[in-house]
Image (tube, rainbow, N blue to C red; front, top):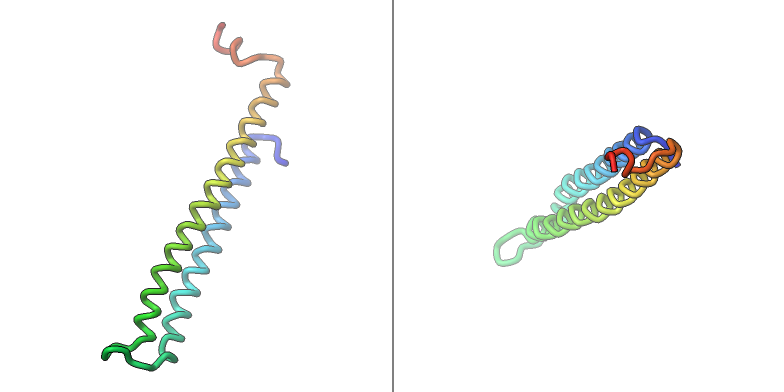
Length: 106
């Protein structure tokens, strides 16, 4: 576990970039892969090609799931990082021999 505030923040931003990149790759693979294979569903329904209709409707659901996944993962990561930063601050305050109230002049 990193001990300094800088290490905790660097680890946080590295994880944010990794999560964002993975979800962006998922988005790209789904978007372009789905449209590529939608042609294979070559039937018509009420005069419209059903493959592209299903791709468009399914795409919205997948995009919504990607956003919800990002929100949930980031909430968990933010909470953990906040706890790590608080623990780091408390350790630093305890190691220096000063309490928070003495710094405020109380």
